[in-house]
Length: 150
Image 1: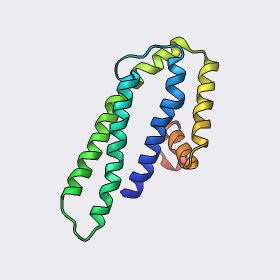
Image 2 (image 1 turned 120 degrees about the vertical axis):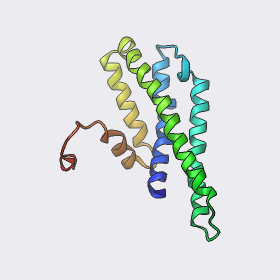
Image 3 (image 1 turned 90 degrees about the vertical axis):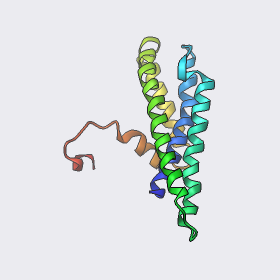
Image 4 (image 1 turned 180 degrees about the horizontal axis):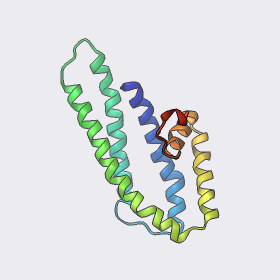
């Protein structure tokens, strides 16, 4: 679990950085955002998510120690639930809002430039190979046979 969580957490934090450094400046160049996507609200949400992601990593040491009690398991369970629920709320709002705005305000050429900028951002990261795989894996068509994905 912890190896997966570290990889997931690194990607997730990098994704949030990409939104702030690449995607939102692009969107805000033509659109005034509202609701959860206003910069101050986004920052509070993302700061909290970062804190919770790192909390799980910090509690790994306590679980692996000889002086184990149930508190770390409780904290980790609550942290995973918090990341899931807050992420779902935030990304649902984002996915209901941003595609419609992008369609109305940006040309296909501009959207392709954003895609290139996002990939460039990830390629400059310390975990570029894993980030690109995680980022692009969901883009593949749904296959009934998982072997087709290999």
